[in-house]
Length: 241
Image 1 (spheres, helix red, strand yellow):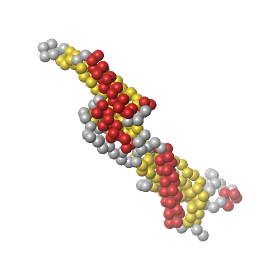
Image 2 (spheres, helix red, strand yellow):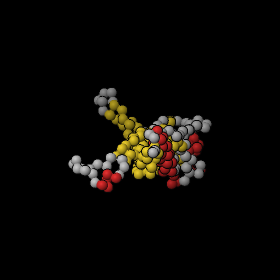
Image 3 (tube, rainbow, N blue to C red):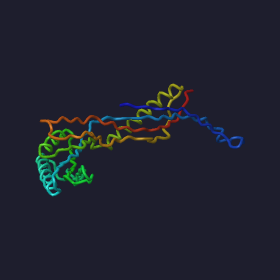
Image 4 (cartoon, rainbow, N blue to C red):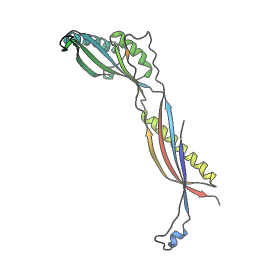
């Protein structure tokens, strides 16, 4: 685990107001000192979930033909994904577009429609990051011809964040102990503990765009994700006698 910290040893004096003498109660109070530490904790995990965006793109002289060809190929892709055991509620349509493509005439410079491009994009959510390569191969072999993104994430992102908080608290306490001992004293009770920042990673998207046919077995690596948290702790400082 990696962390950084900043620390402060502070002294608070009990004083009167406007130059008047302090009250007997305040006069009896000892000068109070504190040790304040801000520390960061982090945990690193391998993502265990994945999300893939892939498309079927077709082009034809007329919109109707392009639409029909696209529908047939995307249906084949979805059917192939179902055979892999992917449920329908894990497949969602992300975008659909029919776009005319034009070309400018040489004589009158007037744009003319020469073809239509149809794009149908679906997203596939996987319960295991290790299945990405198989899904890519199957989808492309079945008719998909564009993969726009692959995202990896943690199923238990909240659990990872709680581990990072625990690490940050331990780091703060350890540093406070070192400071107190170096200053000739020891730590008293904890009087304040707050979180100051956090880093809960979003799904990590691989922005590569794959076109055409996949390899016999597409290798895809999930890598690692780091979740971090920062805390500030304040302890009473007790001077050794």
